[in-house]
Length: 272
Length: 279
Picture 1 (spheres, chains in turn blue, green):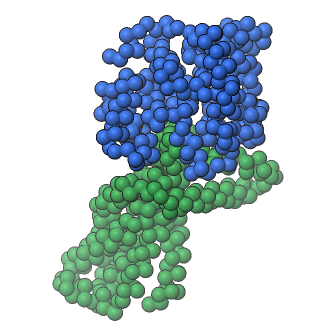
Picture 2 (spheres, helix red, strand yellow; picture 1 turned 120 degrees about the vertical axis):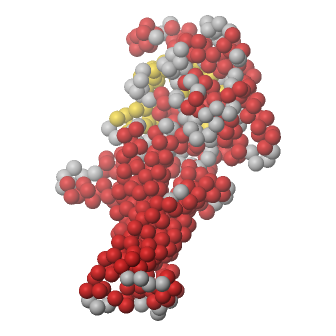
Picture 3 (tube, chains in turn cyan, orange; picture 1 turned 30 degrees about the vertical axis):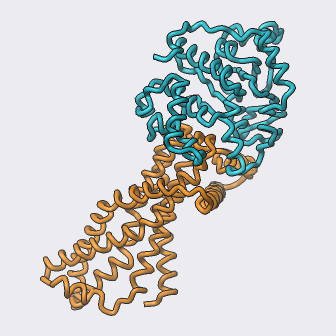
């Protein structure tokens, strides 16, 4: 079994001192993600109403909120799967609005995305799923180098022995690990995680959290994590953004969130 | 799929907002058709652009040629053979009744090769391949696998749609030749059971006076059927919404719309061929 399972589920929380140090350091660099006053509607339903958000290199930002508040839509805007009605989304300094698939491709190669249900290609094995981005974008690597990279990433997520299995043979938690391995295989600078712990048991959630902490430490990747799980957000995130009805209600560290007088924030924390 | 390529939701939303509320039901229907047709045209443009620019997905194309071609062959051959047998039985009786028995081989050859073979192939492939492509891509769409492709900076138009549509275009004429062959053979067998005739004589009389222009245009018109089947099935699959219900809806719509448009295209193409290649 992998090293994560052997560890206890109650994981250390990122200390506020460490958080502040990292935030100050990262604030001096240009943001990896800069979402500015974004609006998005689907017909008469206004999902995002002027959301702004920045994420700096090496920073982990958790986006929290009730179901239907636009958390996943925000993530889809950042990855370019949807376009905002107004406002701008700048990734690595480039406004991605209106970019064609081909022009967006170089930016996306520097990003990894873990879907809520992993979205593994069901006709490919685990190894083929993880190697898929490499096979399409790294023609400069030999097959053995690509295979080695796949094994390395699978080993990082503790799934090295599952390479020949089909996604349908794996549990939800294992599928998420494979999804994470696929997101990591291109060595991204920005990783977007959509509900990484949803549907997992407490131990599975703790394993994913620990994996994210390990990746933060080893790869210095910027993360945006959409989650309902306040414990997970507290464990892995430097800063938390709380959304309600498509607006940012609160943006800050967990301690700031906890000491907030905002009624919605208090209600949210009370029921989390 | 994303807004950038073709987001059915986005297009429907923006057009719906502009829709005039006093439109009659007929107006709504026309409006919906124009929206669908416009979205299909944008989709076709994106696929054409992706298909013409490298990297080319050769491996996927070969896989789809096998999927569309060799796996449809038994069904197409059987349908062609059945049509040939039915035509022969009907033609024997009718021609004997009118004292034109000598025209039997020509009647079979011309009706099978110029019309029955191509249209039967088009409809059989619409059913088998259209439903398969529609359901497969819709299933990928609802399980976010197509989004995962896009996020991995791989164009779904290039990897999924272009090889499937190209395979349909390339394989349809070959399948038509197979359907024609089986139709002619079964036509001869059925005719021989009614009144014995050698295969040599059947072929010689059947093709007497025929030129390449009698047979090539009807065979190659099926490439257009292939384009219709592939394009509609990929479009329906990649723009579907909703879970299992969406997959079922995409498969059904793929078959119904592809079959309908194959028949409509046949009307236009027959007229076109008669004008350009007069008998």
